[in-house]
Length: 377
Image (cartoon, rainbow, N blue to C red; front, side, top):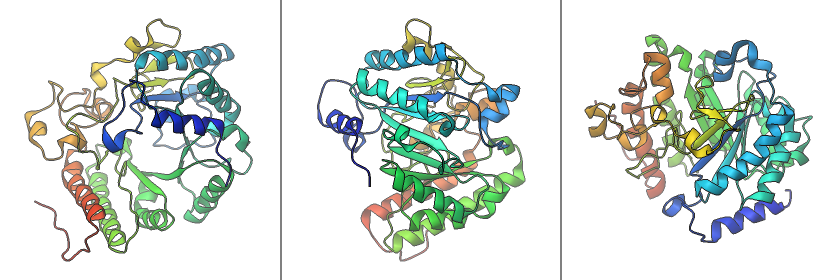
């Protein structure tokens, strides 16, 4: 186990000191309310056919941020932090494969430590480079999500053990996009994750979104995942359901939308442009060289919020509205051409969100299951 870094100590002080900056309510006080999503490079060790970046940037997938743009980014993040008035912020390193340039990750976190009161560090990786990466460059990363891609569960286990041993992470997540291969083995992935104390994050292959056969199989598998989670809760396992299904947050009970999309999320791309969405790499609202950076982040089109005037009335009356919030605007844009209307995953949400709510309640109460949970039809 590695020692706390100075940055980690800084974060601990940040959580405990009241300074008037906006933060989440109650147990959500440590939840980031502002998200810096950094795509420093589109270079990657893989070409996954469900990857948002790979499907959208095409021949630009080798583009890497220039030195001039990177230097500006080091200044830009503290500038945004100073004016956003949010207490808990997070920086998420995406790509491409972030582990290809850990030197830049270190420079960003060093700048954050020097010029802010502290920002959480998170990283998404396919894990291909865990044996050769310079872990000293990642000492300020608190959370790592590893995509299982098409590797075996045994190899995933080996990689995550290396991360646990050599990093300072306080939590690890397994990510799996439900292509046909992972759809077939999702129960085995679920069992592995729970039994080893990892969080789970599954998401549909959006590029199969109009395939009715695929959607039917996906829903069937999600029900089986919920059955498996329920069994493990009954056995006393600490089962996490947060972020289990796409970007859903089943433990969230607030009426207001938990999603920062188009409001408190700044996605930065390798050319220095910025946008309001982690998934849409083509929609840009400005650059990090523009003045008044917060104004460039605001974008009504990407608000994931059931109070939007173009969300149907049926969504406002739905029992799952505080979690679904009408569905991901990007996914609606991609599949329907507009960010209005109900979620493209509405059928799945209506069946799975009540199950996740039930699992969360079961976990909190500690009651043993006496009868099998039945989904309302």
